[in-house]
Image (cartoon, rainbow, N blue to C red):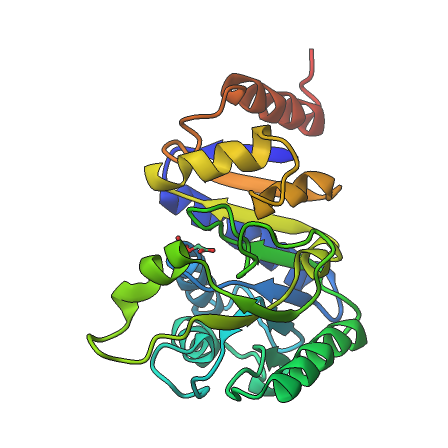
Amino acid sequence: MQVIILPSTHDVALYAADRVVDVINTKTNPVLGLATGSTPIALYEELVARYQAKQVSFRQAVSFNLDEYIGITDSHEQSYRTFMNQHLFDHIDIAKSNTHVPLAESKDAIVLKKSAQDYEASIQQAGGIDLQILGIGLNGHIGFNEPTSSFASRTRIKTLSESTVAANKRFFKAGEYQPQLALTMGIGSILDSRAVLLMATGKAKAEAVKAMIEGPLSAMCPASALQLHEATTIVLDEDAASLLALKDYYQWCELKRQQLYEGSLT
Ligand code: PGA
């Protein structure tokens, strides 16, 4: 894994934006895997700013989001479709028809299973994901792949863990229906992406980050599955990196990489 430790959350967003723009500008039909949550908001703000500054166009881009709550409409205030429209899609030139978020409004298992299969098929049809953006949950989840998710899992129905429901409670009004199930891309689906970029910021994520990078491969930390991916970058602020045992080594690696590419290696 490439582990990059940057001074601030803003630097993490800038780094992620550079990677996204690089995919957009080097591929003819770029396919992005996108994530919701508070962490990628700064990335989306930066992408909107670069679009407004005419530094990037998303006209050729296709996107697939990781997950969606089951049982609420697309237009619900808390749906991940609404989140993506509000934070990114409404402000850039991507064709809405090229943006995909799992369709999970139904509460019928057969309809949901078909929707999950169709989602996998449309990722394939688009040629697979070039760059998958991820956050990490306090419990080590990626997408809504909660602890004990299979490393081979595909897009499917998943019951949210108690800690995830509690962490997301703040977004729902008192007494409002809060979904406890989601349709999520699987860990196997995520590992199929050509490259993965996981962003984590803040002290609260330090334990999960340590388990992901330095812990054993374990279904108890779904993000540890990324150790199996040959092109994973983990980009962290100082707080999220604070518990890493080999922090100095990761910084040393980045220095050597820079020197190698700049031709200044001694
Ligand atoms: P957060 O969520 O970015 O809001 O911390 C990350 C996640 O649960 O995947």
